[in-house]
Length: 483
Image (cartoon, rainbow, N blue to C red; front, side):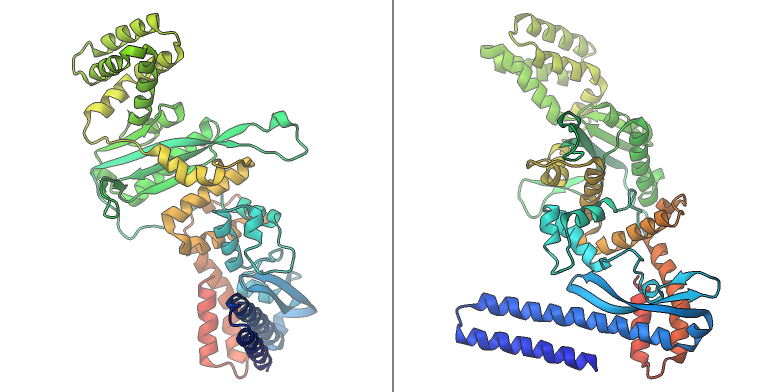
């Protein structure tokens, strides 16, 4: 059997590495890499043998002969997480005139796919933290895996990632929603004029229930039940789409009757303030961090009276008197009359007077804490998109923003679900069924659909293949169920 030959090669490779190591015990690196390489070569060979064996079983099956006529056989290559896999794949013509690669349909491999789902997960995980070129080198393949390939898989991530339906809805009185944006350098390509390469914003919105003391770091706070949304949403229609998605999540995961208020906090940008309109029970609150920046910058123009001006500004904003807004307006006008540089004071006036109710709400409502949107932008978006010199297409930045949020929301182990869902979307685009409302399908439904389609083949195979043990039957069932 081929498996015996593969095992002989594996053992020989390991023993040769061991012999070289004992001749030079200081070179443990060579031993470790040689053993790893041997194990990967065995794994890739084994995968190829299993797939070729299944293709042969399909070809010899009596049910297949009455429905599908074999046309030709070819050698199929695929990049897997352990290296290049080569296997036999037979091309069939069905009695209705359609053509099929039955093996590819059973294992869920698209006609134009040359990277396995596990390998795609590895590429995306690596691309989350490093360049496309570095991600392409993370898989031991000799089939020319390039940074463009990685880019195409990042761009191929589903535009709207579905939510898993919770078993039970959460209950809380107050929800906190915070938002900000990251400025990303745009790149259309080396052939476009330099003036076309400007910048755009990737937006981030996250919600949480409460802030509590962090058990890992004394004196620090952590957010409870945080969920992230991000992407390049440009224009009023896209902004509405973003906030509707946030509202859909709230409706799906929370008992909305129990919610008294949804506090929307940000720096006062119009798209952030609009969230209070789109979200049920939404109320905009000004970001205290930006308020402090504006006050410090404006007070700095008073030179020797900097501390006095800062104290007066805060005192006026915290004042509960009805004339507080008038007093603030009068005092900042006085500051303008003596300041050499008026822009910081004008920025303060525009921010406070334009968001007076929101500023007062932030300072007087104890349920509204500080806004940490700036730090979330830094860790979730800027760390990959803009903290180092790099440029992105809008599609690439949008998908990368969504990927980094998905990793934080669901964990890395769930990335395979996103890959399978995205492949289903790409398949729909190729077959002209992209107008279906797929954004409301759950990942569980996608897996069930794969299972139902593949079982029509497997159940027939199990009835006629001689020597197919119960363990093999169970393994096939389990593997297809996970598609």
